Image 1 (spheres, rainbow, N blue to C red):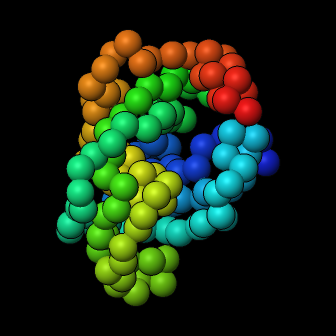
Image 2: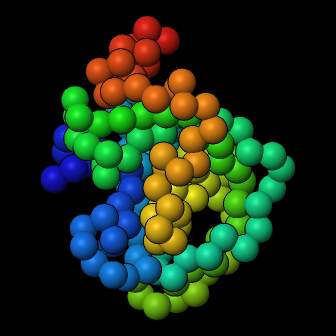
Length: 142
């Protein structure tokens, strides 16, 4: 399982060959993310209805770019706060504000559902790096 290997914190149905507007988010602590709180959700037919403030760049990777040493990372501009409408796994409609990492991940997954990959959002191509380079960068920050 990806969580057991600390791989990925979100997955959209098109990434596994399913033509559905469905994504799951499963944020968990790792060595690179010691200060995050666990967060799980399923979102069906999600739509970002409002964004707040300006976008800021944060490091981002994607399971679609490869696993472990084959993975790729880059800085991607995302909003720090978004309002999202979606249905949960029980078919209940929600309108909810997300901040921080959950906001970042929901934007990434909604992009997948709209045919947009994180590489399409990269503004500074000099920030691209392979997994091992990213891992070294994160470890050097302590």
